Amino acid sequence: MPTLEFKGKQFVYSHHLSVPFRELRVDAGKSLPAEGQKPSLDDNLIIHGDNLEALKALLPTHAGKIDCIFIDPPYNTGNEGWCYNDNVRSPLMREWLKKSANPVDKEDLERHDKWLCMMWPRLNLLHELLAEEGAIIVTLDDNEIHRMRDLMDEIFGDENFIATCLWQKNYSPKNTAEFFSSDHDYVLIYAKNKASLSIGSLDRTEAQEGRYKNPDNDPRGPWKTSDLSARNPYSEGLYSIQCPGGRRIDGPPKGNYWRVAEDKFWEMDKDNRIWWGNDKNSIPQIKRFLNEIREGRVPQTIWFYNDVGHTDQAKKEIKQILSFENTADVFITPKPVKLVERVLQIFSEPDSIILDSFAGSGTTAHAVLEANRKDDGNRRFILVECEDYADTLTAERVRRVINGYAFTGTQREELYSEKITWSNFTKKHHQIMLEVEHFEQKAQASFDKVKKEIKDGVLTVTGERKIEEKAPGLGGSFTFCTLGEPIEVESLLTGQGLPGFEALARYVFYTATGRSLDKVGRPSPDGFIGETDLFRIHLFYQPDPAWLRSNEAALNAERVEAVAKGNRSGKRAIVFAVAKFMSQKELTKRRIEFCQLPYAVHRILGD
Image 1 (cartoon, rainbow, N blue to C red):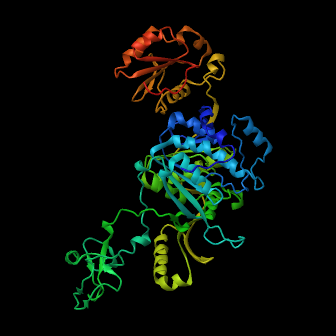
Image 2: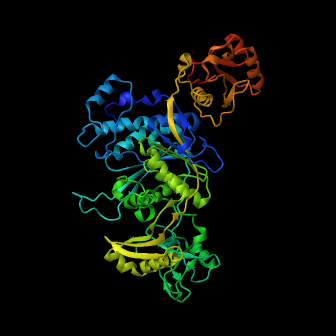
Image 3: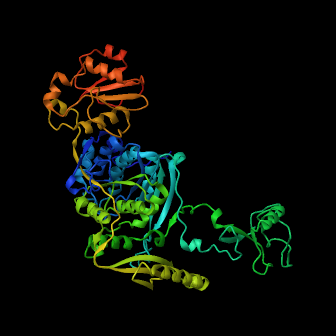
């Protein structure tokens, strides 16, 4: 398979392996736990810190458990002011970065190399976090989409490519464009394992369901017609038809064939699945019943703004929730909630875990909470944001969405939009007016006013309601975290910066097995912390320098007996402690392997 080469690749190729693990530290003051509960790492998470370090910190708890990853990384347009400052252990790499522009701007001729160096280790960690049946969704524009395809092919495998969708981000052309108005971004989708991926269908719109009628009062319910003829050659598709009204049809239109054989056709007619028109003399059509077609509709690769929102709408959402003075105060290209909701509808279940490691304004959390409200789901989100606004903007938006937010003014919701051209207005004006009337009538009970306007060739129906107190909250909770010091087991030698028992337990379990540890109980006499199909893992540890230097910290005969007694499965036991008073020969007889802290923390594979 072809691979993409870029400056610095040889230095960042394995960089994700050298990034130290860090403890996730709960900030109770910035968290919003459920009523009567304490902040917990089992809740929704908002993590403030470098996303490379945060992703590594999530491995011991979430490796292989994330169902859906949605990321909106820097587009690398040269105008975003992003910085590349990963601490890669290479003198050549550091020398290169020392001499080049940071933040990255348009004049930086190596900005694409830096962007690729930034994305490579993060994508590798995201791959480790993604569940076997999960999917990763990335939004980008023309600046990096082609390079991102190559990166994703190399890390996730080209065989796991699912689709590249187009999101119509603008509702009208930009007349200031030099050549073409850039009206779309890309939504790039890969699976962890395509064979294990299953996706959801999209809800049919009211307009789509409105095309199904029941003029003959068929007990099977609403239906719509489809052509009986097609251009596909079919040897049994050439025959004459006698209409119930007396008309004889000699055969299908020239160059066409009937879709079904003659005997099948008359079987369908007997079952009232053929429509002859009100006069019973029309060219017959097949009746397709609403209750017999696939529930929902298959996702398509073009996502129109009237279905999933546009950039201006996203800016207004943030402005409305956080009370910015104007849309210039918010992100340049935020994503609308409806766009992420579309992703969740296709790639999440009601109990899925969704990760966004470029969280920005917190749209992903908003979409998760909205999805849970609609289907009573229990989806959880994990947001990672490195900037200082992680609390004041990202988390604050989520707080207000959960609790409701003070709002005085007019709340607007787009109900319907249709691009109007002379051609489609001439052909569909009656249908368009009926749909506008339908949405207008439906909105009367929920809105104070329904506004209709045509702007830049787009007909829009907007519901408006006056709010003078508080917009209702969606409910939910989250835990706000920061990143602690690196978990360096060598610190056991000095007694400085000792990790807590739970943090070290998750760390040694992951490094020994490559699996995440679901829950950590209190320290037990046999030190048992968890098991896999092959191993039982034990840890004897207290974050106390005096205890670690004492004989109490060692693996002794009493503890060996406790480990062996609890091992009814006969699995191999791996025991972590600072010392042992038993020979490895004696331990081997009991299927116990000793790993000395801090020296022997490593991944153990095989028997």
